[in-house]
Image (cartoon, rainbow, N blue to C red):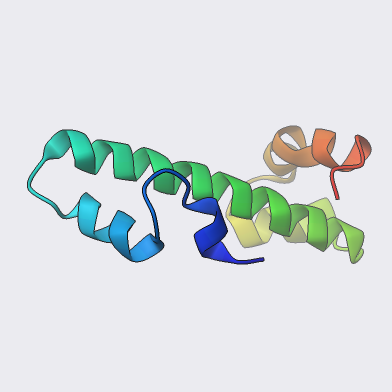
Length: 84
């Protein structure tokens, strides 16, 4: 999975990082939102992969720093709907 493929609309990850530190707060907020979307997509993709490889919800939750129920509630629908 290429990270830059997810940085839609604002270009590469380097450009997003530059925008976050830029002088225009509205541009910085847009970059933060783009990074948030990227992180959510990456988290989902890795949870799906971990489940496909047999990781338990407990192991996934520990890696994410959340409770098992929280990880399951957030991601289980991706697994049961064939999200891989």
